[in-house]
Each structure stands twice: as C-alpha cells, then as structure tokens.
Length: 399
Image 1 (cartoon, rainbow, N blue to C red):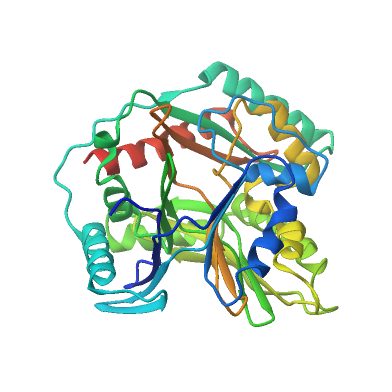
Image 2 (cartoon, one colour):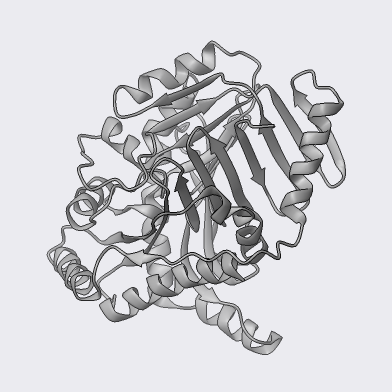
C-alpha cells in the first residue's frame, strides 16, 4: 500500500498509527496560520495529524527566512487520514475509519517492521555545511550579543547533508534510529516526496481538557558505562549551574508564552530541572502547565507558544532574528513540531530534534543539530558537541 503514513511512537508499547487518504493541506509561506482553524472546523470529530515547520514564525512575528533551503519542506502540513489505530501492545483499536482485514493487516505489518532487527547496513556520509573556523567565529560573535545584553541565550544550529540518496538507501532508517533512541516522542511521517525519521525525547505542548502542559528540555549528559558512573553523571547534570541556568531561562520564557492564553494565575511550574533518563542520555526537563482561557482556538495556542523556546533562546524574538542572521540554512521542519489533534480538541505535539528529513526529488537527506549558547559557552566544545550528536545518529542508522 503506497500511502501517507504517520506513526507517533511513545516507545512504551503504545502509539498512534495513521494512514490512507489524500485529505491533506500543504501550505508554504502564504497565510498558513489562517488555514489551520478552517481545516479543523471543516472536519469535525476527526483526527488530524500535522507538521508545523519552524518557519511558521514568520507569520507569528515580523520575521523572515531567506537562507538556503536544502529540504524544501513546507511550512504547514495538515492531514485527515482515512484510518487511525491506537496501538497498545498487541491490541489494535481503530479510532478512525471503517477498516477491513486489509487495513488491520497493514497496521500490524507496519508496526512489526518498526520492531524488527534491520540487518541491512545503511551507508550514508553526512557533510557539514559550515566550516569549523566559521562556526567558532559565529559562536564568539553570538557571545558578544549576550555580553551586550542583546540576548541571554540562543540555540545555534548547523546542518549536515547527505546527497544523492535513493529511497533504497534509507530503507529501515526509522527502525534503526528508533532502536538507538527509544525516545518518548519518536515519530515517522511519510507524505508526498518527504520522509521524516524523528527520535525526539521532547514534548513541545500537550492539551488535555482545558489543561496545557509544556516540557522543555535544556541540559544533556551521556549515560554511564556502569550503574555507578551513570548515577554520578546524572547527579552532575542535576547540579550543574550552567545547565540549570539554561533550563530556567527557557522555563521563564515558556511561562510568559503560556500566560498569553491562560486563565489568570493558573500558570505553574510543576517540575523544575528534573533529570529524565533515556536509553542513550540523561536530560534535564521542566514542566510548566496552565488552565486554558475560554475561547482560545488551536491557532491561538500556536501563535502564543510557537516556536518553542528551547529551540530559539531568550528573548525569543531577538533570538530568532539572530538565528536568521547567523545560521546558514532554513530550518524547515527541524525545531518545528509533529503531532496530532484528536476529535475532542486535545492534542500532543513534539519538538523535531534528532531527526533525519528526506526529500526524494532532490535525493537529499538532512540532519540538523544545535546547542544552547550562553555567556559561558566554549566554541570548541559546542562544535564538538554538534559533531557527536550527528555521529550518534549516523552510527545508529549504519550499525
């Protein structure tokens, strides 16, 4: 079955699988936000899956995206699939559609393929798009902006590209990536000429009833070689003043964003700088929640909170202006969001990081990575950290 597919995988045995149907809206640059609520309202009581590109920022604030674009990913994708399955272990519950055995078989075959061992060697070579010398000079220039009080923190990213990649070259790519990350906001999205392989550990924002919850990540440490070393690394991250400062700055930014759409006095930090442990890393996560003010639409929530502060910096608007000035690529879906809206209006959106984006027309595979630049940042260390992040992804899919 050649079809659009989205799999949102929590890696705890549950997930949502959507496929089938061409009821899809793809918008690039022009009035994307105006179309979101219309699309939703015209499809009552339906699941809608979506990709929100970072460059939607240009329709929320007076900003621009004029850097080179290697992926050509649209600003907005909204899709109402024919079939949606709730996956819970070996249970397949159809939430949308009137499926036959054919659809159940497709769902089971797809899920089994994501669990299987892929013995095929995926041979891909990524090339950095910025030299080490230029990267380091840019980091030092950004620190001058921080020193001058222009910004407090900025997420500075770079792109690695593999060219002349055929579809056969990336078969099994999602399964391999997911096997090394086992991330709670993992996703696979295929539509048109694009395939997205996402191993994200980060939630952007979730709505349940009238409660919104955001969970930004700032602060990462590798896993230890044994239990003793692992606990030491986790404790060191928990108590690292630089990592805590970075996290708290983004918490303050997210509190401000949520206050625009929250009931007065309802914004709360329910977790501050907690360390979560994943398969390959420890990460510092904070949780901010609020009660949603009456009359706020999905678009209102996006306009108030997107892009997520963990991928911009603070203050957000000035950080995004400097990202456009100092980065050399259009981020597209990277540092945007993939997720779903349920028939009752609840939704869950991730942060697109640790992700590969494939365009079958240009035969290009893109992998972007970044790090938070603060006044304490060391340019050499930040460059090495980016290289390590890319290498971990490459090792995972090629192993």
